[in-house]
Image 1 (cartoon, rainbow, N blue to C red):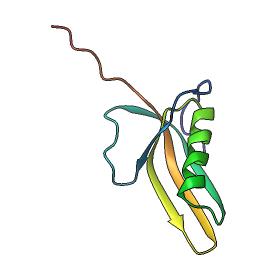
Image 2: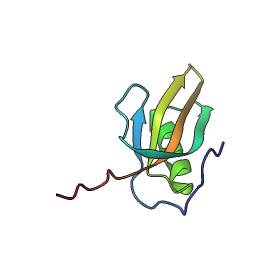
Image 3: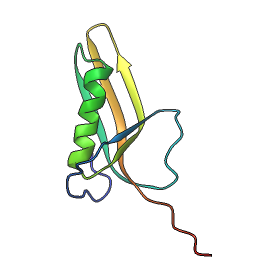
Image 4: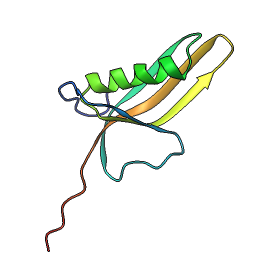
Length: 90
């Protein structure tokens, strides 16, 4: 679900911040992203979230939550663009 303006695809590494982990200081929310599948595990779910976020021009997925059952797994997160902190001029 798109929640903000997407950008051109992002070609760099997309960071993953699991639920409960420290968040970037400043970011712009772009979309809620989800991945799921039968027999899916972290090794397939997280890269799927990263690909979806990168396609929307995002460089991070935050608040990632993973649910794994015996035969099915899913992951959700928020795709964001991390904003740099303003530079201080002294």
